[in-house]
Length: 487
Ligand code: GLN
Image (cartoon, rainbow, N blue to C red; front, side, top):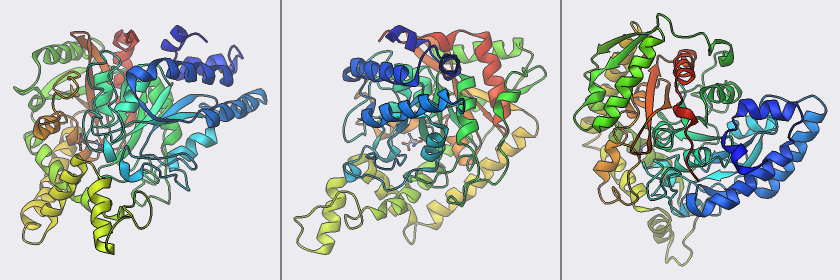
């Protein structure tokens, strides 16, 4: 397949081409590997390209298709964020600490995709341990935005979002703790879904903040997103927070339309810091939804303003605990020229972790330390409960809420690296969904100065069907998802 054909390909139409034998998985896979070869020097979205296993997966997929036993994702080339464990393939978290870590097991989602016969092209770059909003915190490389390679792709799933936007793969999986799927999806003009907390098993996702982390798809279209979620969601006894409830077939309800849908628009998401062009694009998008039959109502969620503060206490606290395991003893980087055991542990952490990770460990350790625990951690947990309750109340009156995904479009590389607060503010609209554990999607909704703008929608817990319905209706009525970068 030629490179331009890849640009218009979705999982849905690739499935058709594979099943009607117009293309084999091997041809498709080789085309993507060639595309990666041609574009990687500009985009830097892969930490590892697993060429040999990809070719092998593709040949196996062709055998399956030949025997008529293919599934929805058989033969479909994909990427996985490099914090998702892949047996036998390096999984680095874009950290020096795990630079040479080869997991002895697969994440639940990796196994699910393998069982489908999907083709793994490689591992996507991220901010170290998923901490960041620009992918510049990777210990290895900065990923570039395919729409403008002088700009960031967002983060922390910048590799996954950029690789889908640059048509280096048909889809990728990211992780979202405070916006890491949706914000990069918005900045790269693709579809990013954070499912309900517990909808997708976190087994084999290298932990950042365990009460917030969730895995989800980054795709070209809403239908592709539903197809992927159908195949990665579900109960897993290896994750005690995974929800033991049936997974609906999201494709069955996706095209039901949104006549009579009640959509709430929280006014707190249109504050002064938001780029006026983004505000206009989102307001225009609301009109599109209204024309499709939805009822739009402005509402107020006054606790929204506390979400960012709550997040920057809870997430670092959990991270400080989760990251204690990197001591150079069990696995990962190990500073060998140490004088004693304690010196070894200290130096391993000093040289193994980057600055942002250390900042989070310090913040979290401080918030959890005796004397500060009640004032910070406990207080944050209480406010979290109130925020969750505020959303629950909203969803007793509304099907979905709509708002911008990010207050800005893709910013310049290095623009915010010296100012962590500015970087943190980029997630102000995405963090509340993680705090509340509810699903949320970002879809392409416009362009500002030739850069993509995302519309975000949230729904009540386990109501992903409603998100897909609304997002699909919007996508069918607009052309934004068809705009591809030049590259
Ligand atoms: N950007 C946020 C942070 O730095 C969110 C990251 C994420 O969702 N993994 O923590």
